[in-house]
Image (tube, rainbow, N blue to C red; front, side):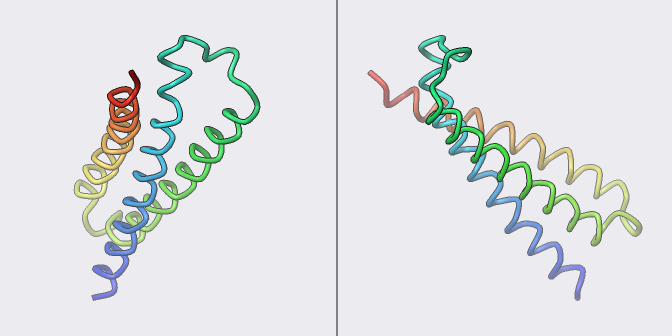
Length: 105
């Protein structure tokens, strides 16, 4: 029972990290589209850095919770879950960029 609770909390953390990565993608879309990534101002760097660093921290927590629940008893499921979580995180960044780019005229 406690493994399912741990997996549930890991799923909540994974959803939160995906939301933070989506926000990172939203705020990354404008400088990326205007091709001014090397010259972003300090406000944009701060927004991007907070979303990215906090998203990575929450993702790290989700991966550690999954390790507590599945690493020893189901190693293949743990590896598959980690790969899926990383793919979803990258997809969230791309989805945020696509969403923001679609709303820019």
